[in-house]
Amino acid sequence: DFIRAGYVQGEEIKGLAISGTALLGEHVLIGGSYQDLTARNLDDVDGEASTFNLGARFGVGSGDIIIGASYGQAKGEGYNGASALIIDSDIMALNLTYRHAFSSSFEGFVSYSRVRTELAAGSYNLNTLAAVGASTTLSDNVFGLALRYNLTRALDVTVGYNWTGSDGAVSVSAGYNF
Image (cartoon, rainbow, N blue to C red):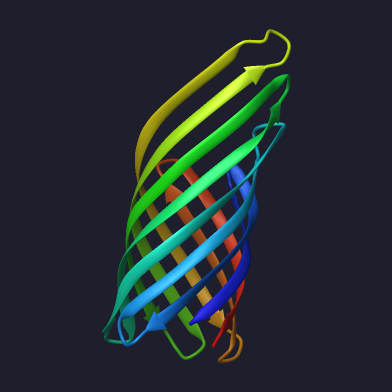
């Protein structure tokens, strides 16, 4: 059971995130997250994403295997030069994570997710009055590595890196475990 706040930065986006997970019984995990995002390669485009997660945790030696699924929505809007932009997406993922406890203070994570994104975007050029819209479905393999240092039983710091193809994102977060 934890709640964590952090920062993520990739080639396309950067932003603040808050997430939480609760263990129900011995195996069932339920969680969610919220991110406030800014596009890095567009002038003034901001958005937000929220995700709901459901999974199962199984103890294996000095670690855990976590399998799960997640559903999320992301929305963004703003301006890039003379164009107004709107982005909307539904994101579904199947997730597999292995967590290994090296000691009572130090943990490592390796993860894989198969992510499907249904994306719709539109733009309106304020100078030419031209409007463009498009939609597509993307499927990606996302790999991740993370290290967590438990400062105390209740407080931790986690650093992670996720990548898909040539695109990657770094994350840093602080967590409170209860």
